[in-house]
Length: 167
Image (cartoon, rainbow, N blue to C red):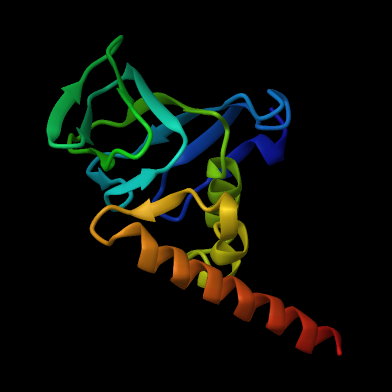
């Protein structure tokens, strides 16, 4: 497996890209992730257009989907519809292996690649990915409209920064 298909995340997750966005022409993006013991996932968030599914290969994965909270074991799966708050975690003492698919592909692959390049994703670089009509990743606890304004403003600042560095 080539190095550009294996991503080591700051929280210890190891992600292997099974099907990239480019390979599926944007139809979906699929990964296999190994989540270390006692690892929290991302903050509760939603994707406006993408459906996200989690299929456990090994271990146990806790998933919040809307108001529902479930624990998945090997061979079990959950699907999160678009625009639904969700998160996940490994609350056990054993690693969890899970296959995750985002349909359509959306921005998830770019977000993962960005996170793998630094301990903390630089906010302006994230904004460059998640802004304008393509913005699809939003935190669950904050209304989408103000977040959209924030992402667009930060993307503008990032653009200005690139222009200043070139000039």
